Length: 140
Image 1 (tube, helix red, strand yellow):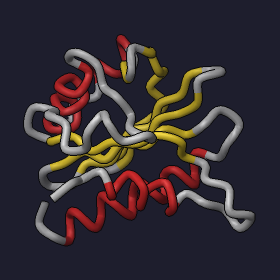
Image 2 (spheres, one colour; image 1 turned 90 degrees about the vertical axis):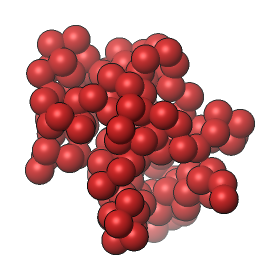
Image 3 (cartoon, one colour; image 1 turned 120 degrees about the horizontal axis):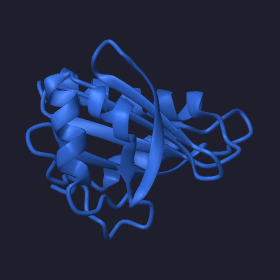
């Protein structure tokens, strides 16, 4: 089974009333170690580099967000400023002129969505939550 269809689903969930999708890229990684579930071959894949997935997974699994607070959140080689975390499972980041990140963990995965610059992160939050909560409902 390919996890890439979840990228399309997530992006579709971020559309507003006018049909504009507010997320432009997404991926799913494993909570245990940060291995990719979605492939980099998808046109809208968020392509984590090097140890980025492992670093994100380590923080979300341990629920220790101090590395994000001190050094930022790195995705695709770009440093995003850590904004906040909610319920020890949702993380928000932003970088001026680059957009924003929303990450939410389920029992075994982390769903990551990227908001285009100038779009609403709240819509991306909703799309990420739909996928993460669906995986959670499956025990994943």
